[in-house]
Image: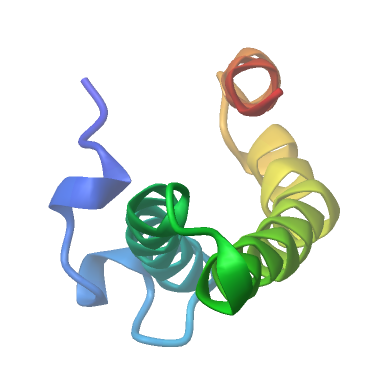
Length: 93
């Protein structure tokens, strides 16, 4: 059974600058930004726009890293790489 990336420390993921660690940090940051966007939805204004722009920038760079680096590597080295990356891609849609 595979342990979730969310439950592994940085060392197990290849260090603080590994793609897995960076992607995990993106998910944490995205959760915070989504909370901020929800909290500012009723009042709108600049704070809400800033949150939405930050979400858009993060999602774009995060998805690019997954599609250009992470998923191709998973497909090459993991026996279950194809179905795993396909499942994650479908979830993200």
